[in-house]
Length: 402
Image (tube, rainbow, N blue to C red):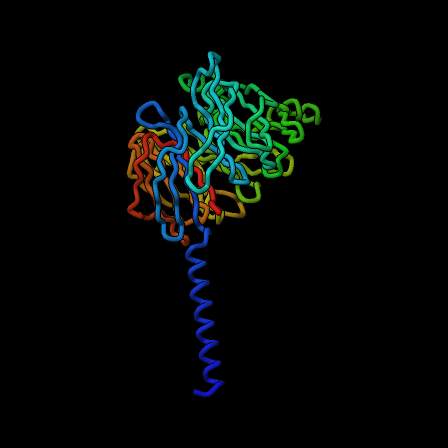
């Protein structure tokens, strides 16, 4: 064998070895590997928050058991550093007061276990939603029965401080007396630029807009802020008003924030609002989330936009389905596409995984989570054959592991 041929073979062997190492590294890469945390109601068999390990590349799910033993963690949020998880405790009494609780946990990315850091009163009964502002320095909480919202500073170690703001929702009540007898804060999120906080109030048929000061964590009522601005119609300037009896539950925003989609729990509709630069919302469409001809009782529950911005999904409790709409990117309006049975009862929350390939549905009354595959070309849902047994699941959140 000549020297040149021997060198050539050595180079080929070296290249093959490098390719093998690269492939092995890619196989063991943490990309597309996540923890899935499941919030539940603990009135029956549930112990609290459950965890799964999820490999999006292979769609493999590994149960990790109870991550934290806590009462009624009906909604959770995860900070940007992926080190901490925050959960509400949806109860009416906490330490003798008319309040629920909010807990801070440290995440162990290896085991999925959650370690309690501290717990504070939510300052209103039945907290049902929690989110973080865009700086990650504040937790925003909606208290359903309390009809108010609260802002909690987050310390550098992840612990929650005492509230920097507690604001009572006010306004004209909706017409459905058994559900709209009082204000009911159901959802809260900060705007994309962090200057405002949006609150959907089921009892008031409004999405309220509060000015948010991220320096000190305070909220200013929209009416007060609008009055200072000299607006001739201060009551409407800083809110989005829905049709009477809508019962707004949750909302979702288009990628650029120019459209807001509000899900009505009581009338199972989606109302589309166009947003101008002044945070003035104008209704451009109201569309049913149910198929034509359905006459049974239904409570709409969750709404989300696919990461590609082309599709919007909602969940129906009663019809027990996921509704799919296509989104017109220019007008923001929706076109109904189809409804997909959730293979369980009372689909409350659902979550699209970070890769946009899968949709996980939490069926509260049948104690399971069903995993669907999303067709990238149509947004339609297909079966994966995967069903996870979880007692009373009501909230799903993914966190990347590295």
